[in-house]
Length: 257
Length: 257
DNA sequence: ATGACCGTTGCACATATTGCAACCAAGGAT
DNA sequence: ATCCTTGGTTGCAATATGTGCAACGGTCAT
Image (cartoon, rainbow over all chains, first blue to last red; front, side):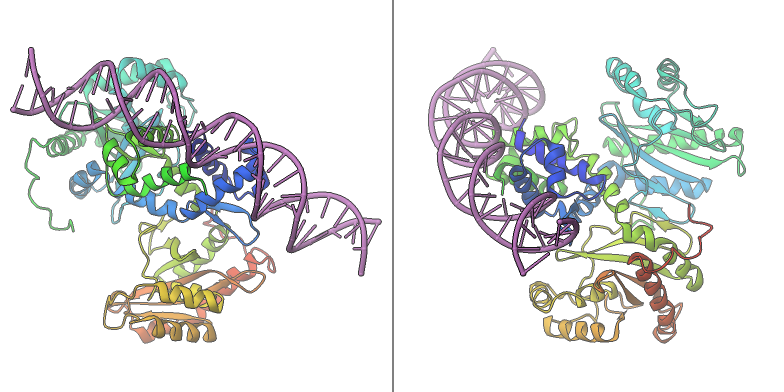
């Protein structure tokens, strides 16, 4: 690995905590001021960091551009979107799409009652990986070894009384999810919110994404929500078929630009 | 500047266009495969790129995290938000907040009829810098020399018949904006959308951000929208006062978490 | 099976990076 | 006003670091 690049990239999360001046950066990197200066200059040239009036550095606007383009180029998302919109149309509840990537689960799309939010507002924030239905689906498909490793490594915050308490319970839940091909989150993250989700598979059968429907208790009970399961699964399967190329892109969706 | 880091960072926008394999990256960078490999590995270690099953690289999830944190750390945004929400409350239209940063204008907050969208969906996309009200406000405050330089450098796309046609017209418009202390965009970007905006200033009087109210023709005419101007300006001034520390944080806002 | 195509590894060379020391500029304290 | 501290910037020599080459190895298609 490249030491120089490694150091330069280490600056970014450091600045993410808040603005810092040259000396602070140098100290935290464990390098000479000169070195930090050159790295920061290079980052600056690429718009990754910005220098404010007080000479301190903070993250730059280019990051937005990249993040934006990155999310737009996720082809699962593009394929899935009309289906998710349809699902939302039929059940009226919030629909999520998420992917797994190296120890993180991120939402990459969301359709709410009225507004499709392309850049999900919680993107990047830690998803409740130990309880979310989509997280269970994505992790359940990992190889045995990796799944265990990830499960051991995780923290298990007790969001509610029904949150997954520890690695053992989580692995057991994942086994169930893997077995049945769908997952739920019944009040595991927020006491009053329930979700049901299903996996989206690529041509090789591996899970590439997961979608879910969420609704608060006060609107529909957990039992009623579970009645949506067939619909959710059918939607996920339809997306899977198109994604893996084994199906025509469905009937054109009028409100898809 | 650091050559290695420079090359590594050049990979990111390249991948933003879509997934690419090692050879393509190497070719477009103009370096040997080996070199590209090491750079990509380093980027990968930092989560900036992700390697999909087909071995091609694409942008990684860490970028989302960084972009998210970057926007959260903008203190203008934090201070302004409750005011913007209040403004939206009173007029019912979409409210935007934007900042200028090295030739780019980016939205950093948005409040819509019902949903506050923290991570604006268009963040990163080229803002219509030559016509948007907020852009005019931000550019109008640049130093004479820089303003001219930027104006000359820009492209002037004719979004509509009322778009700013060229640098001369733009500079003239900026002078007016600077003079009057507020700005409009009357159908300059989208034929049917009008905006009015006002500047937010720091303790030194320099413009640090700009906010605007947008509404379609069909809901309110341009004339009616202009009647909101005093409200918009008052809001911007209130934000300015708090931001520059010369005012107490206003009355506590109940729906601000 | 054979060949083409890509990604990967080890290595020798030299280039790009590093830390030092000295130089500035700004701001506070004396 | 002057000194002193703090923090950023520049030039330079030493060498650690990154580079390209060439050879290897896996995968897929013919």
